[in-house]
Image (cartoon, rainbow, N blue to C red):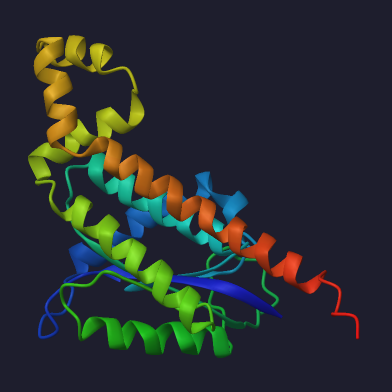
Length: 226
């Protein structure tokens, strides 16, 4: 069967390997996220976990939702590490086992691994989407580059406040929690580009559905009469 595949790993210098503690931290992080997001997966029994996390997701939008869930969880922990992500599409095969954590194989996984190898050669880039259609792939990848620019602008110390702004829309409530004036909190919200982040997130989540609708409308178009 065919499915979208999401792969992610901790960013590091090519010459450096993750130590056992970093791998454990990564695994614990993934295991804290996935059980809450099983609705986004193609099947809860279809993911592999080690130094690189791979899962088959229900669709492109669901893959992007899962990325945001991971990114915002990292923000709430004050950025203990940074992840890079690949989304691609292809054939997958699922071994018939009962254990929840086991490997998936197939061309889709091979494509994800190959794309991850390429992304590692671009140390400043964290995202790459390959939908098998070049224009779509470039569009999503560029949108995520703008998203990355906003996310990378936040320092670890700032990320805790960003997480609060994303959780509580009312800046007055955050001001009370932080013991700051409402005016200072509002200015901080603007300087952290929270609205730009929210708009970029909304755009990325809306676009897959717009593309699907456009493709359906094209397929339903009547051929011209002669």
